[in-house]
Length: 466
Image (cartoon, rainbow, N blue to C red):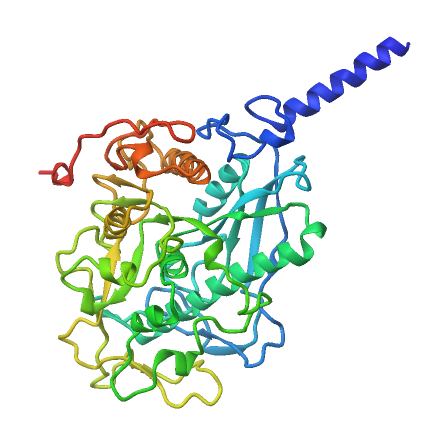
């Protein structure tokens, strides 16, 4: 009877261990994606879980913050006109994480991610399947994936040639949230981590986003000074600066205070079909000086991006479409997309008002390609994947040169390549050790840490399809 019991107990232990790891059993010291034994094209963990939403905004913030909403955003999204004060219902994040892991002995790396949606109230972190799909797959590969929600609400100028003041406002306050959410995640890990079912290794934290979420994450990761941020949000000469009417970029609206240094924790950036808004003064150059001037060795973390050659929202190439024009003042009773007093900070010294000359470009919206080229020029580890026919976001048939036929298969490829890239980052890989880092309609089959990338000979000229 004792032998039967021992055999049964051994069978249960073996079953449980094999249940933890999709690639076979492993000691706790190996069960992290940092370890080069793992081929991150496949899953490590079999089981994951998802947290309830975690609030990162202060309930009684002082000064107060405001959430703008518009009755007609210009894209079929109908809400009520409102300006809610200290509303934390939107300022929350959800955590996807492996279970049955010994977090006390070995915390896991994390990815903090911002969803797409053009800063519209129509979209949330649960809109569509992209975020849920990639969050799940990253968690299966041993990453704690944190999907951050943020305040949205903007009116699009019905003339798509112009960017409205409401969109500029939404982008700025979302950029405040990115910093506040990151600081809060660090603070909670420091102060309350033992009470969570997961533990974050704050030495390996990554940030990412898709479309508008990519703009948010790129600002948080690469705009190392407040002045860089403010220069990217110019207002009309003689009118208050954006920080004077919406508060400083590192504002104290969040549980994580402004004394927490989040930027030194960012070890890599994931940019999905997005870019960054920088001052127009860097046109027609590539913006290199904006990111290089005054930078130290810890600035400009490693970079991986995915983009479509035919993207019309974030054009890949600078052919005039990367220059952004602010909406002019209204005329003939049209809506005011140039100036707003809505949802500004208390005692704001004036409206948020943009440049009012319609014919002059106001900011430059650089793409994944320019960011990649800049990081390469700075000697940073970088990878970029370009699909010939892809527009904005992945559709069925977009596959970056792989055999994938559905967008879900391509999302999985994005996770596989990103996880493998981050594994290399965590093991101090360099551009010299990884080899080719530009994949134009060409599959990357590299696995594990510092193995050289395969060669890809396609060029951007090959993307021009008759």
